[in-house]
Length: 85
Ligand SMILES: [Zn+2]
Image (cartoon, rainbow, N blue to C red; front, side):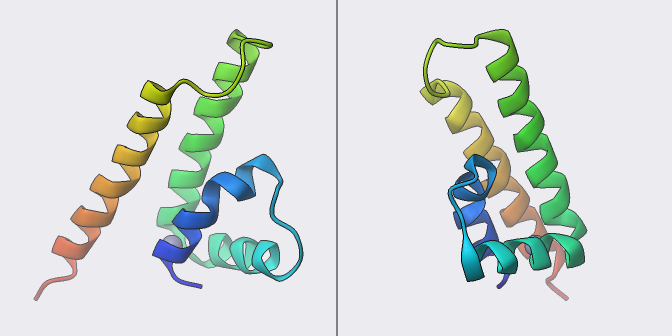
């Protein structure tokens, strides 16, 4: 599993929807990849904060989801730039 594959599955992973092989692959990737670890933790914090703060009001608001996705995308772009010679 690479970073992109992990990030695509991250919301399922955080929700606990992922089981079996994909779940094991995600755990394995996080162990090896500090960048994805950071992204996962910041998403988990955001979601945990929101759930604690607004329990019972429903799913994550679109604006917050959007912000998280933009964070992931901008990190992806910057790491692609950084890997240029
Ligand atoms: Zn990664």
